[in-house]
Length: 218
Length: 218
Image (cartoon, rainbow over all chains, first blue to last red):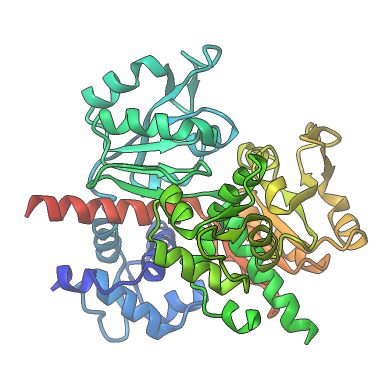
């Protein structure tokens, strides 16, 4: 049942799950054991019907009348759905501002992401520790990723180096690439790529703003 | 015609436009005046039919038989569609690693984004210039944004400060908020919010990876 439902949750639905999770963990920390869908909806500014639909897609727990859903049960189900309960170990390549921002981002530990090793070609960075993560030279990328069976590669290099880095990650056995460089990467079948291109994100915002300005001028 | 077509381009289509633009500008720099849809498709790893559909949605220029589309014409049409030809001036709040990564991101100048002022409550940062952009104290946010009529606010603060900063930006007349903090912001009607939440992006990747692992194990 859960398998089947899992496929019907939209990308927008998956994007709401981390917010549910954050709220549920806050409730758990306060000692709350049950939460009604209406309370989740109000806290996050989402319609209650949407909350019920999202939760039904990832959890088979029935809400109890009057008290609502089990907080710990929902946390476990959402974490399982998002794969946070399996090891999400990542290697990061490119320890510039963006790389360091990701390495020091406070939110990831809660979301099952462990940036286990970082790589940079700048020898001044090699050997440094940034938030408990050591920076290694590029020459050791293949060896370390293969040895530790790291499944995720994060690319925060300049665009002109990203494809080379991607090829090295794939050769080292990476299964998924989280790409922050402004370039479309070529990967073999079976390797996932998720692009997090700031220029592309900005294009969406700029287009929405331009359209809303046009609407406003009509 | 363009207005009508503009509404049918999907979010995925808008996301492809910056890649077309990057390629077209590279071609222009090399002196190429015309490009066939097939060449664009091959360079970017997109189906030709998709390229034709995307370009038809944003440009009324007919491709010439054998030679293809005018490079400069497409650049102008895409830039207009994305609003890059109007002033996309932004104020950034929160000059940490992520804020500095955005301020020094090389791609934005090409995309019409000008981060004109940055703000931080850390007095050690105030007065510094990062990539030609001055860092001001929070106390001057409202005055500077209102005076310069800045339409876009970029929030790169920790999550617990983001709503307060957002309220200040809205009070200063901001029309669109680009939010990198892991929190759902509340804004009045008429203000756009685009969330660029790393934890949410990671959730998508983790979920895709978990599903592909399950498929693989079947």
